[in-house]
Image (cartoon, rainbow, N blue to C red; front, side, top):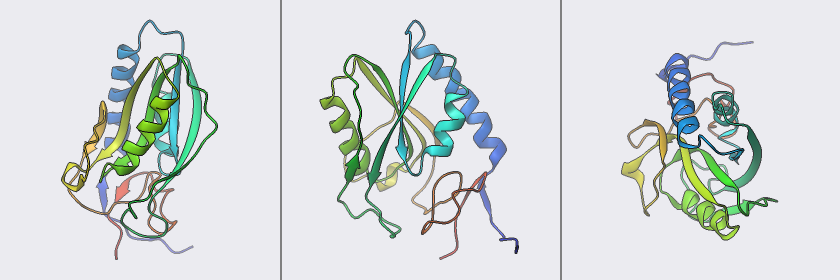
Amino acid sequence: MEQRPFLEYIPAESIDQRIKEMGRAISGDFAGTDELTVICVLNGAFIFAADLVRRITIPCRIEFIRASSYGKRRSSSGTVTLHHDLDLEGRNVLLVEDIIDTGRTLSRIVDELLRLRPASMKICALLDKPSARKIDAEADYVGFTIPELFVAGYGLDAGGLYRELPFITIPAE
């Protein structure tokens, strides 16, 4: 199998260290709660969420929501489609997202989840691109703030590829 050359924009070691820090912060913020419902936004956040929940010291119920706004493109279509079967009433919720760029996807998900009446909700994102923001959307926990670049790896894809990389890269055009 041919090796693909990649620039390690955010190395695996840096990601691991930051997830440890985020896990400690989340555990501290939710200390005293019996259970945390972690909602992973599919597909991009699955690797991040798996690593993160292993760093959280509170028992976690892990759920999933599928959100799509990219299709096969490198930029959001502006239309966000959600698929889930969640019951969040009275639960403490941590929403885990791979990346916040325009804010449209996150805003749409938050609106939907709040409609389900959780007791509390915080947002965690591996990556944040504030310069790409079209609407107000913020996370309570952010792994890395990045400029307006297209990135892949560590769960994020480029046309369906590179999710398996243990680091974040800037894929070639």
